[in-house]
Length: 222
Image (tube, rainbow, N blue to C red; front, side, top):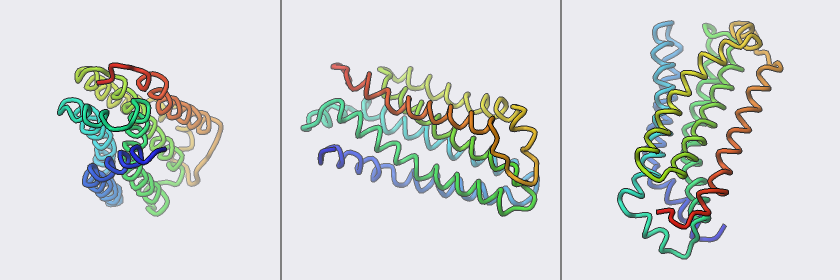
């Protein structure tokens, strides 16, 4: 990784610092709110999801789409850097930007389950899987944004990944191996949990590697 790539990664972290801070604070406060009764749990859980999802969508919009729209991409590509290196810097930079609030949100959700008597510890595997899905879902969103050649396609990717969250919540939560232990007194890490987690890791790795194999080879990236 040369110095230009490192500078571009640091640029992403600097430009998106307030978004990262806002999403982190929002997710942490939302998890805290979940500890104050059933109604507060429902509102807090929705706010937690909103903070994590919105952060990913805004990073894709401002980190990829707006850079093309405002013609700043031409300047970046005029630097001593190849398209492959630009795509690598963009992938690493935006992933790091998302990882900060994602880690805060994950830690806050796990603490909520483990420290709040009203929430059974058996809920922890589902929370871990959900957090893993959110990370993999962002990787898919970032991959799609880097691959897309128009604002319409980026918008479509954002809509599809947002819809995927609802599908995931109702699909994975209904798997017998997960649903049977979700409200139990202790977390159960059975085959169903491990299988879903492995699929998420595979999707994550594929989504992060794909731009290097496709988008980075395009000659008309702008």
